[in-house]
Image (cartoon, rainbow, N blue to C red; front, side):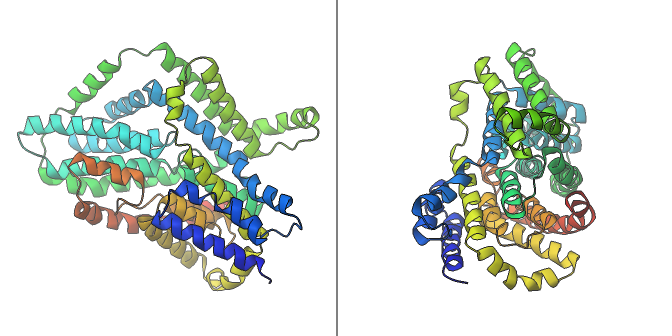
Length: 451
């Protein structure tokens, strides 16, 4: 098949090794295609400038701007502490008995993580969890080793699971949407993605709560006084400020526009085509436009500061671009065709075996590598089935056994209640449970929604 598939494979292997080992910052690794693909002649363009253009185009993919706008909206929620208020209100609504407190922590963390980064969510929720544990320990007069560990693990696991539910919840979801667009020519809408992903979040959170409560109940807790902490935290926030109202309104409008994109985009498409020389308005353009317009509105209204924007993880945008560029090189260099011939054995398996193998291998790989690096590699080599790629994407956020899997897993180690043996003992069964549930979920639900 010529040298081009081999060159693309060499670059892919190089990037995979550096991503998995983090030998250098992962954002720097993401820039390799920009240099190596043109230098090695991966694209059959006939000229160096054309090859440079092909290599550079993925770094300005609309899905990158969608994630940028989503991160900016999340930064505005953080700036005005609206995410904190929402989490506390959810916890108060669910209840403050110990088992309800644990469920409330999981649900609140997952709900916030739907819309802002799982790392920021975990950083916000850990102090709330620590205050709750301190209040309960004061009432019991002893250290709550088991319940404290369960509550802290609930923060990490809730942040990971919640990030699965929307397109902007985790960088992995944007990688999936970009790969689906470039590799399969399929645009997955915001509402369509939520329809495929959010039920898994709803199903899995109670299972995680059940596993964690089996750990937490060993402390034989009384009713506790968690309500005092929640009321005190809410009182400290004060009444709803003008900034919170503006940010909340813009965010709600953006969410409604995203979810209504399948209905609004056909109305806007003819106007956009006539105004911009026949430009075809795809779903990714519409969603990115909503995200940037919403973020820009908050900046113009003075509700999104430079300091808040500075906290946005800008290197994640390079990571997304590098993943899209890798996908473009694998496709443009012919490596995807070569891999497809070698993966015939997987495609010949029954659907249950396919989904099981993909779910389990993704969960295990994400235990030792970041979930974004995992999907950047796997989504470009797995068979080109949209539901199968979606299951792999969901599974990449489902490592619960090791701190390397996701940042929230590492963050809760600072609480003093979580030790590595504890996380492994609780998390490994959850890893296997997630893989099993995703196998059934992919067969029963994802194939229907995305098939």
